[in-house]
Length: 154
Image (cartoon, rainbow, N blue to C red; front, side):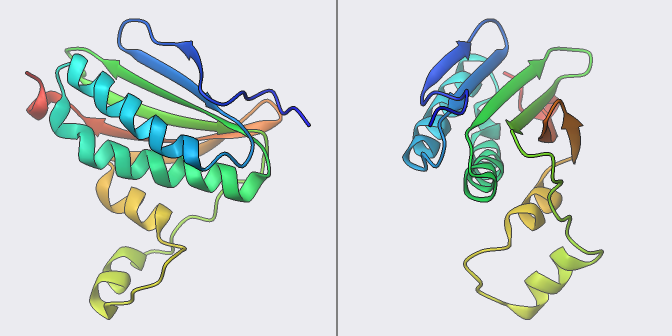
């Protein structure tokens, strides 16, 4: 069954924008996406963002693939000065919004020393991103995060 998302399909890699489509349930493509992000961040002059961007993008992309039953499209956009922001979005085909972490969830997870293997993705996003959110888009949604790239620009 085709979902409109083909694995590894580069839909846009121009300028300071990367758009990459991943097919339904194609978890191995998540690793490929991390490599593309790393390469583009280096080319864009903000390689210091790589670890955080790769982690947070992996969480959003994996959530989209595991919880929607469809594919996803990751888009990364670096807005140059004066704003110098990096925005990463993951679009999927299910309108249901993700459950946001309860107030204080980050602090409780750190303090408790819990070692759960799932359910931490949005807690990580909330803890490490400068801002993040989710919004309806067509028949699906976009979950996004932003980071300040000024301090890391080459």
